[in-house]
Length: 459
Image 1 (cartoon, rainbow, N blue to C red):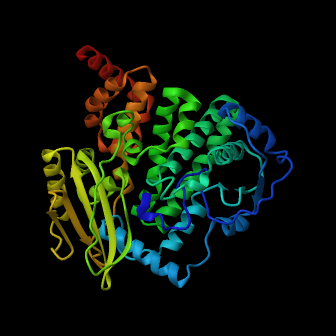
Image 2: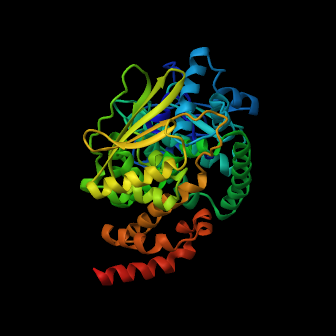
């Protein structure tokens, strides 16, 4: 979500496992861990190679208590205006359509979409329920990793314009917690406990997904989900590179959004964004701005073009910046994008023209500015406009790219071999395979192995 939704008070995770909610620190801590938590905290510290500075309070809550802790109060008048501006920006970019109650949607995500959350602001863990099942233990491991991250790297930096300008710290933190969670399932749970864990977590995840599908626009879910979905393969890549120490480096100095979106760029000249200036039109009220970031830019394009065209276009963008503003009663977005060369800029321009389609010129237009950079001007078409938002399914293609690349390099392949295999295998995956997560399915391994052999033979 990056700066586009940084004004949302609650930073939500759409997955069973964790979330962040903003409240105030009270500065008090228990003398020791809850007896139910202490063995898990010991395991997390040992596996993660870090030490806890102190225990934290773990609150085991009833359903109603958890809902109260995980959800925000009704928005104030100022909050409602800010929410309306943000929804208008998202409509202008094609991410959502129609009427959207942002406060209610975020509350659904933080409540129905989670089993527990660690709150960096109060330094406490909040858990739905009190029965210590295998699923509860796994959930607590995930949240204890967040405690450890906060005490060593300060998770209050999440979303900070200065410390975390592209919002990727959140993605690294979640990918790291997911890494430890999966290790606990594989290495600590017995076979019977793993079966019990899956029997509990699978229907819970399915129920949460169904509820969110009914209550939250798909585009909003996609925007909230993207950092966490891309964080997992990126952290797996870091783990393969240097284990905990490499993940620690990313927690201290988060990567740019383009690297999170495409780990193949890590350590290459293309990993950094080119500085781009976007001018605020005269006589308007600025209501937002910054960088969209590669994942959000991809979702914007995929809302109105094919995932393949959106991915190819984002790969050609060397830098981008946007500003959101109110012109009278209408909220608009102006984005400036540059390609690595003129050919790349021309490709970006053509994709944006395709994205506009038959929208009226007063709603959206594409042009070149005085520096010959590509400029997109798009305004909120209003909640009654016949448009659709981005689909969660559109994330399947770039996510599969990351997963395939990380699988190859984790199995001993070089970065160039990983890139080659992606180029050979990704275009062969059908929409059904992408939707089913085939990129991470062991059944795909023979195809990957064949591609690796071909890539090595061609090098």
